[in-house]
Image (cartoon, rainbow, N blue to C red; front, side, top):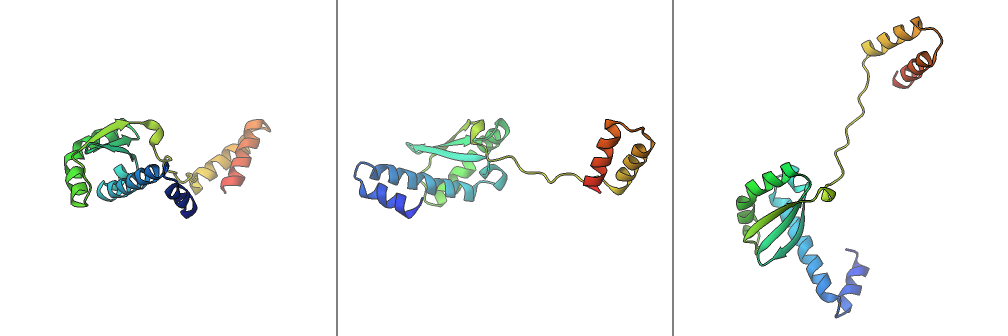
Length: 140
Protein backbone atom coordinates (compact mmCIF):
# COMPACT_ATOMS: atom_id res chain seq x y z
CA UNK A 1 0.00 0.00 0.00
CA UNK A 2 1.15 3.50 -0.64
CA UNK A 3 2.09 5.63 2.33
CA UNK A 4 -0.58 8.21 1.52
CA UNK A 5 -3.30 5.57 1.43
CA UNK A 6 -2.01 4.00 4.66
CA UNK A 7 -2.01 7.33 6.44
CA UNK A 8 -5.57 8.02 5.25
CA UNK A 9 -6.81 4.68 6.56
CA UNK A 10 -4.77 4.95 9.74
CA UNK A 11 -6.01 8.44 10.59
CA UNK A 12 -9.68 7.52 10.31
CA UNK A 13 -10.89 5.57 13.38
CA UNK A 14 -13.62 3.85 11.37
CA UNK A 15 -11.18 2.69 8.68
CA UNK A 16 -8.27 1.77 10.96
CA UNK A 17 -9.51 -1.84 11.45
CA UNK A 18 -9.57 -2.22 7.66
CA UNK A 19 -5.92 -1.16 7.47
CA UNK A 20 -4.99 -3.58 10.25
CA UNK A 21 -6.77 -6.46 8.51
CA UNK A 22 -5.23 -5.61 5.12
CA UNK A 23 -1.74 -5.52 6.64
CA UNK A 24 -2.33 -8.84 8.42
CA UNK A 25 -3.52 -10.49 5.18
CA UNK A 26 -0.58 -9.04 3.29
CA UNK A 27 1.82 -10.45 5.89
CA UNK A 28 0.09 -13.86 5.73
CA UNK A 29 0.40 -13.83 1.94
CA UNK A 30 4.13 -13.10 2.22
CA UNK A 31 4.55 -15.95 4.73
CA UNK A 32 2.50 -18.31 2.54
CA UNK A 33 4.59 -17.39 -0.51
CA UNK A 34 7.78 -18.01 1.47
CA UNK A 35 6.82 -21.48 2.74
CA UNK A 36 4.88 -22.92 -0.21
CA UNK A 37 6.73 -24.37 -3.21
CA UNK A 38 7.09 -21.62 -5.84
CA UNK A 39 4.82 -23.26 -8.41
CA UNK A 40 2.06 -23.43 -5.78
CA UNK A 41 2.74 -20.06 -4.17
CA UNK A 42 2.25 -18.22 -7.45
CA UNK A 43 -1.08 -20.03 -8.00
CA UNK A 44 -2.46 -19.54 -4.49
CA UNK A 45 -3.91 -16.46 -2.83
CA UNK A 46 -4.57 -16.01 0.89
CA UNK A 47 -8.22 -15.06 1.32
CA UNK A 48 -8.69 -14.84 5.08
CA UNK A 49 -7.78 -16.17 8.49
CA UNK A 50 -10.77 -17.13 10.63
CA UNK A 51 -10.40 -18.83 14.00
CA UNK A 52 -6.96 -20.16 13.05
CA UNK A 53 -8.15 -21.54 9.71
CA UNK A 54 -6.25 -20.05 6.77
CA UNK A 55 -8.45 -19.86 3.67
CA UNK A 56 -6.48 -20.05 0.44
CA UNK A 57 -7.78 -19.73 -3.12
CA UNK A 58 -6.15 -22.03 -5.67
CA UNK A 59 -5.97 -21.26 -9.38
CA UNK A 60 -7.15 -24.72 -10.42
CA UNK A 61 -8.08 -28.15 -9.09
CA UNK A 62 -4.59 -29.63 -9.39
CA UNK A 63 -3.06 -26.77 -7.39
CA UNK A 64 -5.84 -27.16 -4.81
CA UNK A 65 -5.19 -30.90 -4.51
CA UNK A 66 -1.46 -30.38 -4.01
CA UNK A 67 -2.05 -27.61 -1.44
CA UNK A 68 -4.45 -29.87 0.47
CA UNK A 69 -1.83 -32.62 0.40
CA UNK A 70 0.85 -30.26 1.75
CA UNK A 71 -1.46 -28.45 4.20
CA UNK A 72 -0.17 -30.14 7.39
CA UNK A 73 3.43 -29.35 6.46
CA UNK A 74 2.55 -25.77 5.46
CA UNK A 75 0.73 -25.24 8.77
CA UNK A 76 3.87 -26.23 10.70
CA UNK A 77 6.05 -23.97 8.55
CA UNK A 78 3.65 -21.05 9.02
CA UNK A 79 3.55 -21.66 12.77
CA UNK A 80 7.36 -21.65 12.83
CA UNK A 81 7.16 -18.16 11.30
CA UNK A 82 4.87 -16.98 14.10
CA UNK A 83 1.55 -17.26 12.27
CA UNK A 84 -1.40 -18.38 14.39
CA UNK A 85 -2.62 -20.96 11.88
CA UNK A 86 -4.13 -24.28 12.93
CA UNK A 87 -5.32 -25.48 9.52
CA UNK A 88 -5.62 -24.62 5.86
CA UNK A 89 -8.82 -24.68 3.83
CA UNK A 90 -8.33 -24.57 0.06
CA UNK A 91 -10.94 -23.35 -2.41
CA UNK A 92 -10.68 -23.41 -6.18
CA UNK A 93 -11.12 -19.93 -7.65
CA UNK A 94 -10.03 -19.87 -11.24
CA UNK A 95 -10.17 -16.07 -11.37
CA UNK A 96 -7.47 -15.79 -8.71
CA UNK A 97 -4.86 -17.26 -10.99
CA UNK A 98 -1.84 -15.30 -11.93
CA UNK A 99 -1.48 -14.54 -15.59
CA UNK A 100 -0.63 -17.68 -17.54
CA UNK A 101 3.06 -18.19 -18.22
CA UNK A 102 4.20 -16.52 -21.39
CA UNK A 103 5.82 -18.86 -23.86
CA UNK A 104 8.39 -17.56 -26.29
CA UNK A 105 7.12 -17.73 -29.86
CA UNK A 106 8.46 -20.72 -31.71
CA UNK A 107 10.81 -20.07 -34.58
CA UNK A 108 10.90 -22.05 -37.79
CA UNK A 109 14.23 -23.69 -38.48
CA UNK A 110 16.25 -23.14 -41.65
CA UNK A 111 15.12 -26.48 -43.09
CA UNK A 112 11.46 -25.60 -42.59
CA UNK A 113 11.93 -22.14 -44.10
CA UNK A 114 13.73 -23.64 -47.11
CA UNK A 115 10.95 -26.20 -47.61
CA UNK A 116 8.30 -23.47 -47.46
CA UNK A 117 10.32 -21.37 -49.89
CA UNK A 118 10.53 -24.30 -52.32
CA UNK A 119 6.80 -24.87 -52.03
CA UNK A 120 6.09 -21.19 -52.59
CA UNK A 121 8.27 -21.11 -55.72
CA UNK A 122 6.35 -24.05 -57.23
CA UNK A 123 2.91 -22.56 -56.63
CA UNK A 124 1.08 -20.40 -59.13
CA UNK A 125 0.31 -16.86 -58.05
CA UNK A 126 -2.39 -17.24 -55.40
CA UNK A 127 -3.28 -16.06 -51.90
CA UNK A 128 -1.50 -19.14 -50.53
CA UNK A 129 1.72 -18.29 -52.36
CA UNK A 130 1.60 -14.68 -51.14
CA UNK A 131 0.92 -15.85 -47.57
CA UNK A 132 3.88 -18.24 -47.70
CA UNK A 133 6.17 -15.53 -49.06
CA UNK A 134 5.03 -13.10 -46.38
CA UNK A 135 5.57 -15.70 -43.65
CA UNK A 136 9.07 -16.51 -44.94
CA UNK A 137 9.98 -12.80 -45.00
CA UNK A 138 8.81 -12.38 -41.39
CA UNK A 139 10.49 -15.54 -40.09
CA UNK A 140 13.63 -15.34 -42.16
